[in-house]
Amino acid sequence: MTRGYEFSFESITSPDHYVELGVIGNGAYGTVYKAHHKVHIEKIVALKKVRILLTEEGIPMSTIREIALLRQIDQYEHPNIIRLLDTCHGSRLVKEQQIVLYLVFEHVDQDLATYMEKCPPPGLPAVTIKNLMHQILCGVDFLHSHRILHRDLKPQNLLITNTGNIKLADFGLAKTYDFEMRLTTVVVTLWYRSPEVLLGSRYATPVDVWSAGCIMAEMFTSSPFFSGTSEGDQLDRIFRVIGTPKEMEWPEDVSIAWSSFYPSQPVDLKSCIPDICEEGKDLLRVDDCSYFVKNAKT
Image (cartoon, rainbow, N blue to C red; front, top):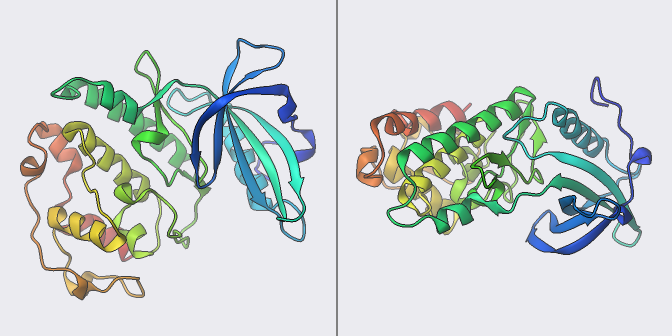
């Protein structure tokens, strides 16, 4: 059990307290509905329905710990983290050996992807990008300080209020981390995956920082920065920008061989992101494959 926070599935509420108004979105880890509370009908929420695979002992302790931790950090009411308002116990699917849970979050009308699409040419101004990135990194730092990795940062999972406040959302892939974890192939949307994720290597907090960097580049260019079609193609596109690491720097026991890639030298980010300012360029710069060597090989 998470220290300092008592939580049990016997004490959580029923999803019957909420009325579904329509589907917001679907993903590999659940469906999100717009809903309101039955009594407080003015209270609009985002209701995420997820299925949890049962073990011989019932609900996995890892699931209990992770939800308990999310509820614990919610007590801080961080301005850049979506609020988890409630957790509801759904039906038990005996045949599938699953149980349905509902996570009730505060509702925000649009995500960053929609916000960028609505922005007229030539796109977001640098001062807006600076403000949004500061908020994103504040949210990421808060999660990491509580040993939580988001693992699926992308514009669709960053909500933005009408007042321009960013909130990190969709913790369907979030995990408390240790130093031996490896990512599965379904973790992190392809275009925002870091090199160590693509290779199936060990990972830690840099996976979220990499995703944030890809999002920042996208805000400047108005299109995904690394839009690969497969893990190999994604890595190739990355190496064409940051440079291909030397063979001696290539991690062992990974899914793709070093010989699969043509040698490339790092390029000036200004050539890829013409409108980026010098401060933004310094923030995004990865010199001499330093990210790859530091994170994919350790």
